[in-house]
Image 1 (cartoon, rainbow, N blue to C red):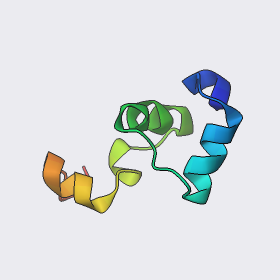
Image 2 (spheres, rainbow, N blue to C red):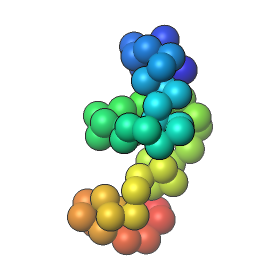
Image 3 (tube, rainbow, N blue to C red):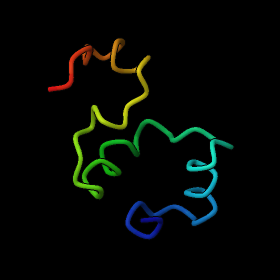
Length: 56
């Protein structure tokens, strides 16, 4: 995944461990790589802000 997103493996580790937050620009790519909807991985506060209160 790190190679596909063009980030370091330590960046992925830090995101998964909660040490750092995933930058917004990576969410769409992560969802696509994992074969899931973007709304499944967006933080709840972002869903409300972006108008995704319901999972489409």
